[in-house]
Image (cartoon, rainbow over all chains, first blue to last red; front, side, top):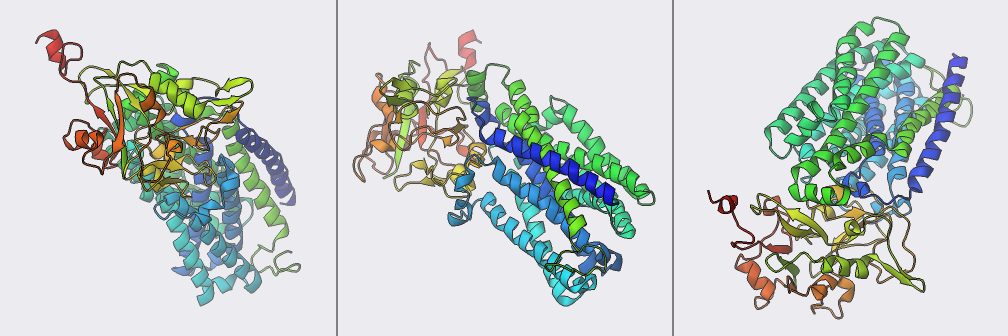
Length: 387
Length: 223
């Protein structure tokens, strides 16, 4: 197990260096292209949303099992799961800042708080969620796993659960309130965001506990993948039907289902929805490796699904609003859609940054398992939380 | 005072003097070595961009301009997490560069595609004003509000000054005697996408019926 953790850490370190390089490239990018205005939200935006959903999903499911069902096997896995959630949250938050073009002004998110902005609320919700997550983790390490089943432990978990659900909903509604992007406005974005969080959370739990952890909790998460995949599948279908039935949003549906993004969307449906739907329950009775592989495929598929929705909305916006369409053609020529899609799908610094985010997670998760007192019943010996 | 602009498409001949005036005033920088410009398609970074308006606004495609509409209810201001995009007392939607984090939410939220981000190198020289184009910021029209000389008094934006045909008018919507307010009140000047509810303050006078720009396609084919 130690060798496995070391290998995970080394791969994570290499990819984290790649991440740092990619962020440097992105921040120092000097390229005059109208594409930066036409399709401003690229792979890094999808990347940080996915990591935030993943972290929230891991915590939500664990908190619900502990608070409402009092499952003891979940309590034994709770420390690892909370560390997993934190290790997923950190790459997400770092990428939020890495994606900003003027990160030096970021204190204004709090100093100039704009209550009508969903993004401003995200800034608050990220902090609140992180505080409750960290507090619950420290509480469990200091007082033991069973402490999470007591009243103060449950209170911390409920606070974390509420802020996490609010964060997931609000993150998705950053898309859902955009009248300028009909493909997103038509979608039941907030609810889809929460469902995606549960599916991603279950998949990451299977991966995380597959590396080291409680077998019963891992199996429960594998079963949860099936249920969450059914919810995500239904909400994706609902999104498509709404887009299809509303003129302005129809181009978003067309571009995903039968247009230039079909090569992203259909693999996303197969890998992100059908794989967990049909393998989750059977894999709950199989070994860790098979479960982890299915869960990793699910995470990849859901990244594609999220990015498909992100990209299709932005490209369909150009299609839907005629003045915008003509503006793009004026600036870029008739092939603007291809250029915009290329920028959205294959921007080298953003692609590297997303790969690097996974590396940062690997590094943090492996380091935490190696040095923190995260095993069931383990008492910290050094500096309050360390082995 | 609520400032507004009207572009009369009957008078506009598409000479792009307004676009060039905007580039000179807001995009270019000046130094001892002469003017410096951003890289790439300059027209795209101008704050008043020529486009073709098509159906459903007009039967035949006609030249128009996309620029910040200075909406009374601006979506870009609502989504801005830091309050960097704000509205002045006289209704001009502005960007405070010192608060902008570069999240591009405003670019996404603008239904008119009026905000652009230039990510190339800074042009050489000094900008004309603090509101001039700066790399990495979601640039937008300011109605040349750096030309304002006194509170409560109208000024003349560079594009209005440059238009030789009087196709651009700038005025006060709250002053019933102002030609801009009158044309809007009479319904001669129309806003784009009024159904969006953003209440734009840039209006267009649509092309009148005539042999050069027929209002309906049938009139051309004689059907």
